[in-house]
Length: 125
Image (cartoon, rainbow, N blue to C red):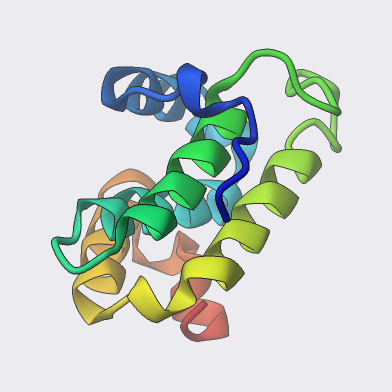
């Protein structure tokens, strides 16, 4: 996947954590979990450059204030973000290893409590 999504420039580690901290509850458990899975997969040494590019593009879209459905739109504001995150996970799923899942689960438990993680109720992504 050599084409750029254009959202890579929106991504930075600081902007990622700022957006999650500010909008985690509004975005919901599923969106936050998918974003964290991608973030932690990008941190893995064995994740190749092409997969990291997919991740950065998807997280850049998530962070960007300009997207298909404004994030502040009640009930549907994060559906486009979720779709982009899910597609990115499907693309790089071979690199979502147990370490990535464990780090994601720990952060989800810290933020939402154990019963709020979609992984604990639906199985692995």
